[in-house]
Amino acid sequence: MSVEIAEMFRRVSHGVYVIGVAAGERRNAFTAAWVMQVSFKPLMLAVSINPGHSSYGLLKEGGRFSVAVLARDQFDLALHYGQSAGIDKLEGQAWHPSPHGVPMIDAGIAQFECVFESECTAGDHRVIVGRVIDGALLDKDKPVLIYRDTGDADGAAMFFPDDFDA
Ligand SMILES: Cc1cc2nc3c(=O)[nH]c(=O)nc-3n(C[C@H](O)[C@H](O)[C@H](O)COP(=O)(O)O)c2cc1C
Image 1 (cartoon, rainbow, N blue to C red):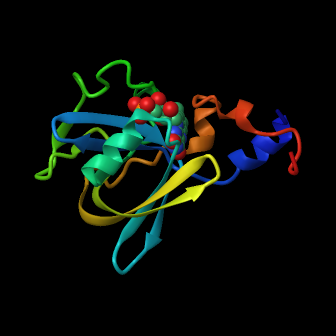
Image 2: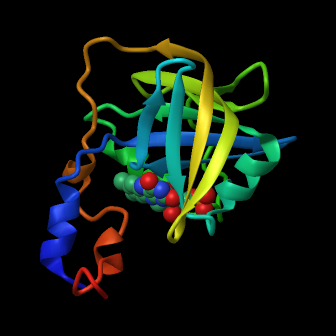
C-alpha cells in the first residue's frame, strides 16, 4: 500500500452520503463518498458501489435508491451506516419510506430519491446512475461533511497499490 497514492486520492474532493435501498419489505442503507451529479436534464446522480455490498442487490432488485447528504457534525452517522448489514442499520434511526418504499434518511441536510437508469462497471465497483424524481432541503445552513475529514473510517487506505502500474 502506498501512503502517498492514498493521500493523493484523498484530495479528490467528495462529500459523505447515506444511500437508502429497498426491495419489497427488505431495506438497507450504507455510507458512500463516491457520489456525484452527472446531468442537469434530466437531473441525475451517480453512485459508485462495491457489488459485494448487500445494498447492491437490493438496489438492483428494487430499481430505486435515495441519497442523503451528511452534515459536518454527522460523522457518527457515516460510521453507523458504514457498518456491514449484519445488523438492521435503520432500526432506531431517523428515516421514513418514500411513496415508493425507499428509505429516506431524515438526519442529513438534503435528500434525493432516484430511479435506477443505468449501470457501468468501473474496475472493482459499479457506477449506478439514477434519475432524481424527488428531494428535500432539510437544512440550508449546516456545512457538509467532507470525505477527507473522515480519515480512514472506510479502511480505504489498504486498497491503494504500491505503484500506479501495479
Ligand atoms: C466515509 C465512508 C465512505 C464510503 N464510501 C463508499 C462508497 O463510495 N462506495 C461503496 O461501495 N462503499 C463505501 N463505503 C463502504 C460502505 O459504507 C460499507 O462497506 C458498508 O458496510 C456497506 O454496507 P452494506 O453491506 O450494508 O451494503 C464507505 C464507508 C465510509 C465509512
